[in-house]
Every structure is written in C-alpha cells, then in structure tokens.
Image (cartoon, rainbow, N blue to C red):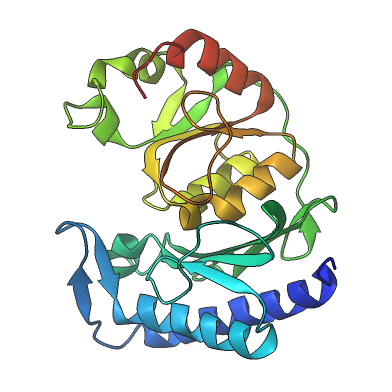
Length: 267
C-alpha cells in the first residue's frame, strides 16, 4: 500500500526544522570532534546526536520505515523496498566545525526505490529547500523556477580542486580542459548545498568523484524535478546503495559536458 506522502512530509519538515534549532543551539558549545576515514573526514557529537534524533522520531512514528544514515545508526540496507529515509544529519561537517556555516541537513525519502520527498535545510540561513515529486521545488514555500539550458562557455560549475591536481583516484588531466573552458569554478564543501545551488540556478553543474547516497539522495530529486539531469560520470543512473561519482547539470549542459569532456574518461 503506498505511503501517505502528505503525512510523512509534514513530519519530515517539522523534524528537520527542530533538528536545525538544536544545531543552532550548539554553536556556543565546545564540540567533541573525531575523525573517520582520514584526518579530514570529521564527525562531531552534533552529527551523531542529530542522526539519533531523526531515528528516534522516525522509529516511534513510522516503525515500518527503514533508515540509511551517514553515522551508521540506521539500518543495514541491501535493497530499497518499502519507505526508506536517507539522512545526512550535517552535510559539510568541516564547514560546520570551522565556519559554523555552509552546511545543511539532507533528507531524501524513497518508496520502493523511487524518490518521493527531498529536504535540504541550510540551518544558518533558515532556508528549507523542499520537493515532493510531481509538485515542484520550493524554498521556504516559494516555488523555484525550472532550469533553463546553458552552454559550457557561460557556465559556472562546482568542482573540488582536488580533481584537477595530481591525486590517487583519477588522472588529473582529464578535467582540466573543462575547468579552463567554463566561465568559472566554485567549491562550497557541502554536496547538499552544491546540489541545491544547481537546482536554484546559482551554479550550472556539479561534479564529484565520490559521494555516498546520503550526500545526494535529496538533492538529485530537486534537480530532476526542475528539469536537470543527474548521473554518474559515465552517464549512468546513480545507485542509492553504494558510493558513486556524481555529475548533475542543466539539461543541455549535461549533454555537452558528457559528450565533449567526460566521454572516454576512466571514471
């Protein structure tokens, strides 16, 4: 039986806002900061407490729903059957630690593998980006217009400088021509915010070599809803059960970059 999306959405918006209030209240406090996979992969007690907050709310209200969360307090998923919440409690933890800005809560809600609801909350600016599939995308209740086509020469793309310097993952020469040909490049340090900036047209494309499902689950729903294109760097559908390369862009731009810059790359 299909889920009651309106009910789920009402609770999700309420919980995201409440979680944001808790995060803002933490700003004056001393953070307990730990590292995960490497010294720059940070996690704080606030990340962990925020994910646990969502899990407690979801489990008590929708006990049949499953949860995939960055900090590992949710379920171990091998499929996406039923209703699945995909949560990043703080996307952009390094920004959160160093700047207390440029981070977001990201929540994507899927049913049987299909995206239904996406929420990205810019906590510091109190900006809630929100989509229900088929109903458009809004920012604090104001509709965001559909994306218009653009070309590489007029585009600003989000691209981490790591990928155009010598690195362990790819030949750094592959993306240099694209970086040279676009109007400008940016890097914000939060995948959720970079995806939202594509959805709003503040930037025109975003490329990342490695993101987890909780980084992009909400953002890709918004971009697709507004006519943008979301794939990996090989042009394939993104997987919500494993890490992916991610390439999102306005429609004509996605095709131009894929054909002229990414085609044949060892991604």
